Structures are given as C-alpha cells and as structure tokens.
Image (cartoon, rainbow, N blue to C red):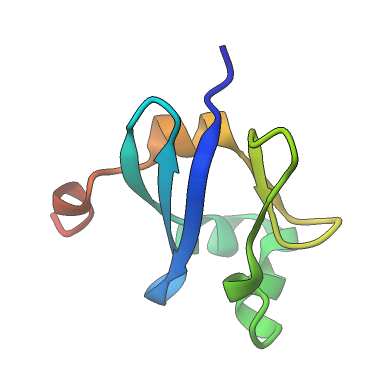
Length: 87
C-alpha cells in the first residue's frame, strides 16, 4: 500500500518535515536530490520555490512544479527521524 501523507512542511537547508497517516514522523533531506537530479536544481536556484512545496490530491506525492515531484514511498523509505539526521 502506498503511504499517504498527512502533512508536509519545508524547513531550512532543504529538509522536509513529513507526517504520514500511520503516524510516521520523519525528515527528508532534499539536498541530496538537488545535487544528483538535474530537474531538482531549481529548488536551490529559484527563490522561494522550495518553500512552496505542495501535496497532491491523492496525498501520495509532494511537488513544486510540473517537473519536480517526490513520491511518498521514497520519503517514507528514506526519511529519517530527527536524531538520525544529525548523526
């Protein structure tokens, strides 16, 4: 089953705070994606774009524009708890 996102909030340093319907609460570092995926570079170079993250109607994907999106299952699998992110 595809995990559904309850809420998403952009934080400093290209981190997303995501809470899922099942209670999982994690932080996802989009910075690595920005460095490795050409389409994601706009998140760093276009002022204010990262902060305008949106949740799609199905709640299974976050997106910024027609070219940059992130599926919930990737966030669920690779997101870390806050303590893990600082290790």
